[in-house]
Every structure is written in structure tokens, then in C-alpha cells.
Length: 238
View 1: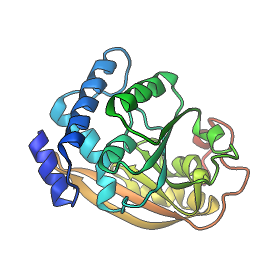
View 2: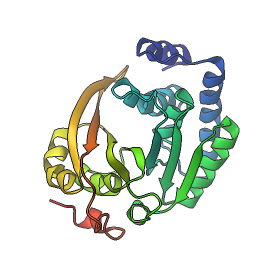
View 3: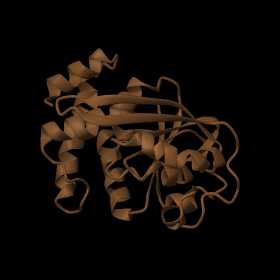
View 4: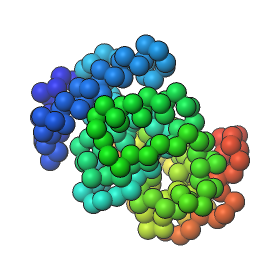
């Protein structure tokens, strides 16, 4: 995906990028590749692939959810900043918090944020399980997002405790989401969530499966969740 196709395909979805925003994506790409030589941020470094599989793919959540309000968003396990930083470039008014367990990635994201001159960005070097038990952030975010982090039965326990009641959890998944949702049905309900929509589409050019799962937080998460680090993965709520 070259930059002109990236721009035109977003315009078809109602997202118009200014020259400043396009420069931010270019800077993002350059820094991602530079830092990737020092640490493992991504296996994808070819420019057209980064624009398609990281930038466009991250922004695809906005095709199915309206980000025009001043939402507070927590991105769990963002890695190199996906999906929250491409969304932040497109929707600068968003307030973004990123949680990641690796300090090196947090350092990269802090430097990236400075270079892109992004405001209202906060970073937390923490495990999602311990972060979700902290009183100042628990059930405080309008939206919690995660992209390709874990199966829904596990991911729900990492993310839903951070979503405020009547807020939204957005999980960005590849294929086999129906099976994951079936396995995660009990976890989602136990943690206070309700599946509102599942949007399926094909990523352009390569036609690979993508799913945007939108879960509403209907009631407060029981205090015992999330459990200790590693427990959700070893013993999902089933």
C-alpha cells in the first residue's frame, strides 16, 4: 500500500489526512524501522506493508466505531503503538494511555510521541493484570482497545476491568473470531461485558480476514478480576 492509496482508501471511509498528519505517519515509519534495528518491535519493515498491516489496519477500528468524541482510550499491550497511535494521528483530540510490560517498548513510544508532537499521551510500564487492579485507573476509561494480544477468553480479563460501566471494549482480531467468542462467552459475561457487534472485513490488497469486536460494559467487574499475572492465560474463565 503506497501513501497515495493509503490516503485515498481512508478518504473513502471519511477520514481525510492533512499534510501534517501524513508527515507524522512518515516519521512514524522511519522511527519504527530505525528502532527496530536495536530492538524487536515488528517483523514487518517493508514500507507498503507497514502502511497496510500496521497503519491502515489500526485505523480500521474507526470504520465501525465513531471516535469523534473526546474519549479516553487505554491501549493494552500496544507493542510498537498499534492501534492507538495511528488512531491518535487521525483523531488528535483522543486521550491515549498505553500499557505495556516491556520498558524498552515504552521508551520507544515516549520518543515517538515527542517526535510526532502528540499531546494527551500517557505510558504505563506494567502488566495488564496488575494495572487493572489499580484504583486510580480501574473502570476509568471510555474505551479499552487491544490488537492481536490474546484469545478473547484471556483478553476480556485483561481489558474489561479497565472499562468504565457503559464504556466500550474494542478487540481487533484476525480469523477464527467466532470460535474465540464462543470460548470467551462466560468470561465476557462474568466481567460485565456484552457483545454488541462483530464487524468482519478483508484487509485490502492481501484480502486477509479481520474482525472488529465491539463489547459494551454493562455492569461493574467483580473485584477479584483481573487475577494475578499469568493466571488469566494459564486458567481462562471458561
